Length: 107
Image (tube, rainbow, N blue to C red; front, side, top):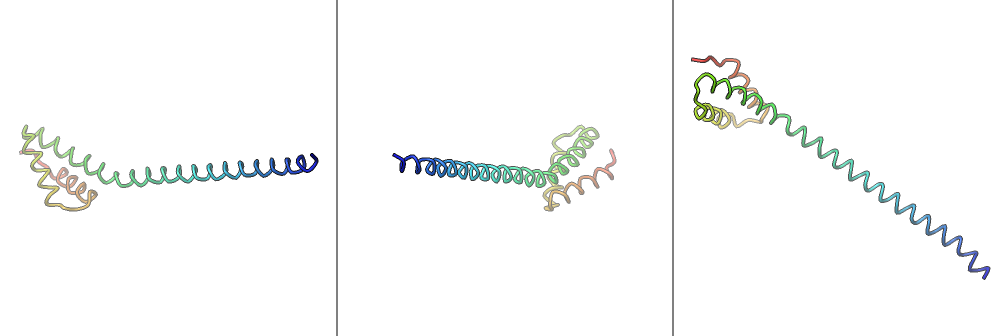
């Protein structure tokens, strides 16, 4: 009986140590997964910033053109032409819309 009771505390300690190790591994894996998710969110946000700038600048130009000409179809076609001609990164396209907006005169 003494041999059983002597190994029982050792077995219990090993089992507890094993559970602690598993819990630590699980926590580390969860932390890594959370860090990856956060990193992905930041990367996606950084990638979207040029598109947000593009849409804001070009939408403002479109609104001004529509207010001037009352022709939404023509304004939309003009923006499509700008974007096709540009074939540039979104930041540069946004700059093109901003530049055109700055020079836009209602005729």
